[in-house]
Figure 1: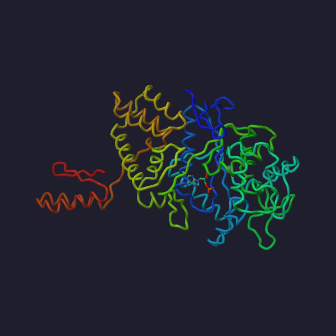
Figure 2 (figure 1 turned 135 degrees about the vertical axis):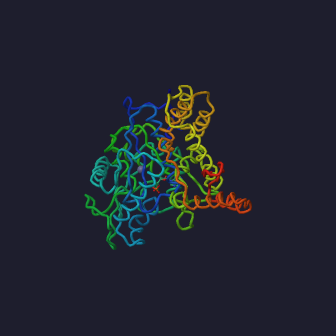
Figure 3 (figure 1 turned 180 degrees about the horizontal axis):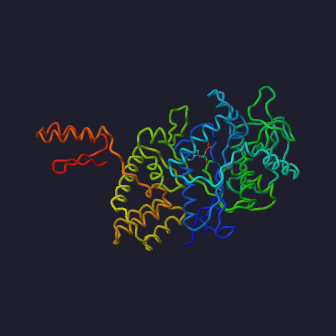
Amino acid sequence: MALKIYNTLTREKEEFKPIVDGQVGLYTCGPTVYNYAHVGNLRTYIFEDVLKRVLNYNDYKVKHVMNITDVGHLTGDRDMGEDKMESESKKENKSAYEIALFYTDKFKEDLTSLNIIYPEIFCKATDNIKEQIEMIKVLEEKGFTYKTSDGIYFDTEKVADYSKLSHQNLEALKEGARVEVNTEKKNPTDFALWKFSPSNTKRQMEWESPWGVGFPGWHIECSAMSIKYLGDHFDIHAGAVDFINLHHTNELAQSEAYTGKTPWVNYWMHGEFLNLKDGEKMAKSTGNFLTIKSEFIDKNINPLVYRYATYSVHYRKQMEWNDEIIGAAINGYTNLVNRVRGLGKDIGEVNGELKERFMESINDDLNMSKAMAVVGEVFKYGISNEDKLATILDFDKVLGLGLDNLKEDSIPEEVEALAKERLEARNNKNWAKSDELRDKIKDLGYEAKDKDREYEIIKI
Ligand code: AMP
Ligand code: ZN
């Protein structure tokens, strides 16, 4: 069955055709590790994980590369402002390298708790400085660069179709770029390949180069590392929509200038944003910085509930974070887990018809809400519980909802004690007390059911 994906480059849903039969080269832009990832960032990583799982389900062997940006991403995206790593290092009184290591570990913990498969290759910008310098040297030799007082810049006027990914007219792009003025740039859309270390302060992260001591610009790392690991022509490059106009447009311009070939990448895929109510952005300063830890782990909610929640909105549509959507996901996920448990432990055969319907949904540009509707149908289908379980576990290769690894929940001691007390109250015919205790148990998320003169506790 054909797999169709939406390609930002052509603005069309296209049939996916790999460069090499049965294999896919996938590059996804990773985090800038100066802070925790928020649930918005993680929506993008879940979308990319689903993409990878869908490719695997279609029998492609995926080589997935993700970078870790640990240098060069400035507070202003357009080569102005402070390096995010160095500024956080001052705030936390740790070295920039310590900051990078700490938040890389936290990021990996988030991936694990969301059941996101690690990329085959994680690569750090600071581990690939030589490769970035080599690429800039080639761009210089080919005449795509120029020097200003603060760095080496890419001349966007030298490429014929700079806005082919964003589809914006160049005037609109230039207008956007003018927000941060650097009067030495030849064109507002030009961007830094190498920045010189400032003369008045000593940077923690800096390297020798043919142009002087400094550090790479933000975009060059992705071009250098993707080409290093995936070659100068690969299948899919993904990220969130905010990367289309700037980061990915610049990656594309410099990569094709470097290789002298087009296309560099066949399919560009972009996930939409997760927003707070009324389109409000997530920011640490406003106290709206929601993380997997703050919203799930600290509240004793399984983080996979978030993964489940993201399936209710197509990846190319904006999603709003609110209590209703998370509340519905808690119920939906708990219900699903209980129904899977109810199927028993014996595994039969995957049902072909259901599998086809499931595949039609995921192969239609990753339509996960439709795929979840097929999951719901499995339980009603006229097949044995063993076959239902086999089918659901097969689907979970794509869903990643941990259904193959369900642990029996242990009942908290507090609930156990209340249930015992309630049984005693009932045996003494103290109905008022028994009702009061039942409500307390319910508030903790459990229900105490009577079984003769015993009790059974179930999670609700
Ligand atoms: P950063 O660590 O800031 O470089 O961002 C990591 C990834 O998260 C990038 O692919 C961003 O485009 C993406 N991203 C940032 N904010 C959001 C959001 N609110 N919703 C979805 N993705 C986001
Ligand atoms: Zn990138």
